[in-house]
Image (cartoon, rainbow, N blue to C red; front, side, top):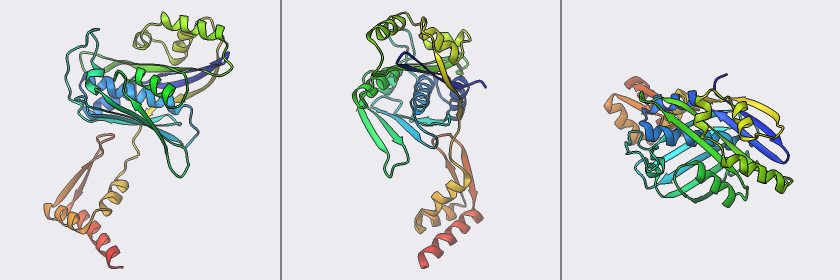
Length: 293
């Protein structure tokens, strides 16, 4: 198991940590991301996975940054089972390093809204949003949880990109004091966080999610609750794409038939589905038959 997430608890504080290097590299490969896009998308996918860890099986969450920066929309879908997919509007954005000498994710995302949608089995999904604070993702998710869900949290996310445009280290953590956490516990936790090194440094040095939790929660005795394997996985399939084509009107399908072929690309994973003229004609006949009924 290379990418996985660990849930732990202690003294009224819950901590989740994840290593996501492999799945971030899968997203980079599928979307041909440049470094700024890699960092933005990788952080958003990791954040979505950490937030989805609170959900039940068959529930899911969507995290979407809609800013006015050159990256456009950055979106990730994650499930409680550890599956994630995501996309960035313009994966080829190239920006100079920011004032701290780091990838300028905040400049790439810009100002706008971060929206979180939870799919919990209710008839309608539950959504909330707040203003983007920095565009650096972790700070924005921390702010969202506090403002929109009244949940004090600390979110840490990171993606370290190498000269070969691949992620060297990616992962993150989320810490949430619960109502029974004492002032003494919170003060000790705050002191730990002041001296905490970047999450990518921990992962680059070989720390697992268990090791990340141990470093964050130094001096605490942790109870580890569960471990979940993480994977980049999209729900698209050829059948779903066919269903989408069947939903088109006759005129649009006739134009595709006239072209003799169609290539449909899933924006979440970059998978391409090709349909030849005979397949398109078959779909057109299905639609015409439905309309005659």
